[in-house]
Length: 435
Image (cartoon, rainbow, N blue to C red; front, side, top):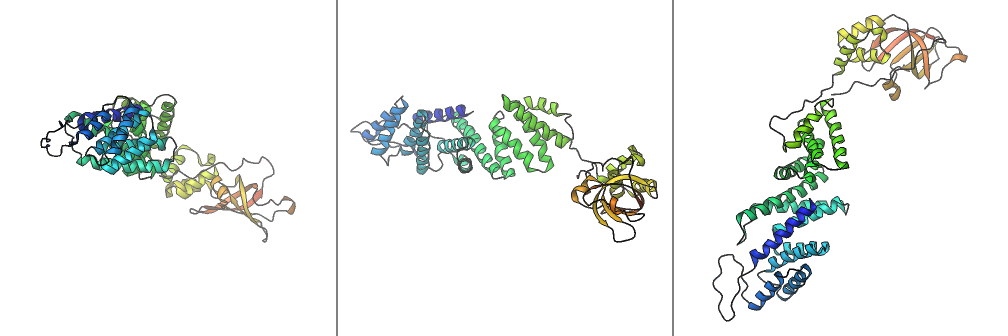
């Protein structure tokens, strides 16, 4: 892509030579009246110096000739044209610093010079992407990009330029301007603005991976969810356009985003197949979004699929705290008044009364949060030699008598130490996924 764009700019600069070379003025003859807005060098010596410079075929010789012309005729009517050609000549020699310096001189002569703005927008973006003062260079690229887009709206076709050539120049530079402005907006996390610029670039040049990929990211990071569909289309499109190791990396990233949005990988291969030949999302393109079940729906499914006696404490907790009254009653009617053997984590102990009281955490979530979800009263005081310590696991038998749904606490009495056939540790349990 880089070589293509640079070649385009060079061709455009060379084309400018033919467009801006003024007609010769015979010595001793008064110049004919110039057509409106047509540039014309009236001094034969100045004319010869200009033509002699622009007709050089060697880039270094052209640089020398144009520099000499601009030094001798700093106020020439052809100053902008000479600077533009000098910019292209420096570009041909590979002197990036002088190319950028000359581009700024072109803009000093005409702040809406399309070729100079395009060169600066492209080069500054490339420098940023190569890690050279990335933030500042990309911001400058974006400024030149937005300025270029404004100038394209009022750009006039130079004398002697074919309509098709001028339209081609506008189309090619618009891609550069939109890409640079879009990437600068993306860097600033203005994702909506980035989408607008990058989408305009991609609609003009659908095979431009340099803008297709960041367009996908701008959609995927922006939200709301409906934008994810466009993002998934363009990330799949980018995977098709990429080559080498980058192709697999983009495809893997795209699949993970698709799986998160859709809830499974089903259909991802179809999206890849579509984007291999389709450049923009069709009007009917859609991807079904996975909506996780609500806690109440998860509780209902659990009650239908599993016997209460086979559930873990964490599953009882989920149904009793988040299930419908009907589902909660189905569980509680089985648990209430029935001695249960289980394990929990000790949050605190109270040994001041006749019977030891323990505040326990029975689910992994509450263990992590150091929050009690079981209030257990033993049948008597625990002997000193058997007294457990806080922040350790505790194996016991207890009989549920009541519970509070939120924040969940189950009250148990008739607690007893278990010394044989200890049950497993508290089962891993996490809160239901939020929508």
